[in-house]
Amino acid sequence: MKLSSIPENFMWGASTSAFQVEGAYQENGKGLSIADIRSFRNSEKQLDTKVTSDFYHHWEEDLLLMKELGLKSYRFSVSWTRIFPNGDEEKPNKEGLAFYHKIIDRLREYNIEPIVTMYHFDQPIGLVEKYGGWVSRQSVDDFVKYAKCLLEEFGGKVKYWLTINEQAVMVVASDMLGIDKDLPIQERFCKAFQANYHMWIAQAIVFKMCREKFPDSYIGPAVSYITTLPATRKSYDMMAAKELEDFYSFAQMDVAVKGEIPYYFTNELDKLNFKLQTKPEDVRILQEGTANYLGVNWYCTTIVESKRDVPEDQFIFLRFNRIRDNDLLYTDWGWNFDPIGLRYGLRQLMDRYGKIPVVITECGWSEKEEIEDGQVHDPVRVDYLKGHIEQMNLAMKDGVNVISFNPWSFVDLLSVGEGMEKRYGLVYVDRTDFETRTLKRYKKDSFYFYQELIHDNKH
Ligand code: BG6
Image (cartoon, rainbow, N blue to C red; front, side):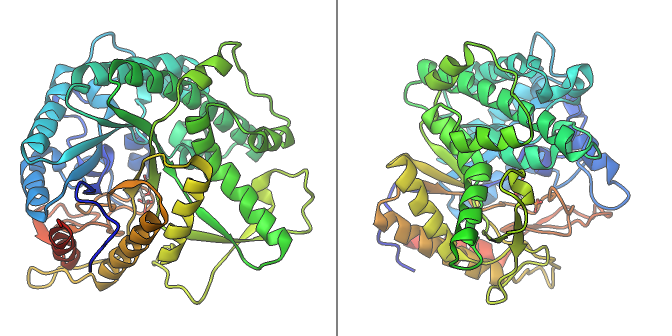
């Protein structure tokens, strides 16, 4: 597979996040996060965060495997509660910092560029219990303190930063923000959108701080970009697709890149009769703190039709149905295989934001998998990677400034929704939801495929 539009310095990478891969959930001073607590609620049904793939104790082996694969970047997150166990401490936990120093130093030694997410679904539960987490403006200060600490500690050796992973996902699944999911929908969303607003303010402050202190660095959000397609070519379905895509995905990118909240977003909040609580300085904060690159998590397309009987003054999430396209392949969990959607989505990013650098921070295919004679055959994942990389190459030929591709995930890990049964890794981890087993790593066919592809595209 020759990829003529991909330059020599392209960062071929892979991706994980702390609570999904590290385990050691209370080791060396780590506190508990909302991600831990959510997972414990499901401990009877599936794997929780206590051990997961035990990266905390297998990191050397895993980084060696990354080197063997030929990775040029590794996108991972810092566990907020390893650094500030309760969230409100004055001083960080030194053992937590030491762990990430070891990781970053070893990556540098292997010439693998660290792409570091500050917050991936794991706000300290201490802050949620103390004042309701992101729903309170106090979270802005606590996040900024944490981000400042990371920048001061690692800013000299990390060039690529991501502030917040998939804010829109947390708004929709609002118990990820500590908001009771059984609240009436209107009340739940009002809290979630206030929390969303506080995250925008916090990330803008951090964007500015990082760009001032480290002018050569790149900082942006990691956005869940669900490229949304109309079920038919009727204008009402096209409008439904556009409105949902704008509201869910582009609002996050518009605020981060353009520094202001778009009209289509506030229009929807009006439908909830909700007025954001703001401060006069916020307009300036958003304008002064913008992203200089975009992290984009891209898995599949979503196909929607308009619910034409629902009046326009109803909130967006009530105005469409999701449609299954029987011409496409789907995972067992309903995520489609639609690589041209990636090219289309990337082109839309260029239309909207020009040549801004784009890092594909996640892209992956999930399967239930078993190991046989030390081998894991994952032909669909190989096809998925092949198809998406080909389409990314075409998008780059079109002019989209993609600088890195990081499939989700490097090793098998705890899926947010489905525990260990739903595997994404290029590397198999020998454990199941309820048995820890050996935790040994096995290279899947997709590992070898990706290794060869990276090698062949060295130029
Ligand atoms: C993204 C998240 O939403 O999708 C990851 O950033 C997550 O943390 C991934 O694992 C896949 O979702 P799931 O529910 O299959 O784990």
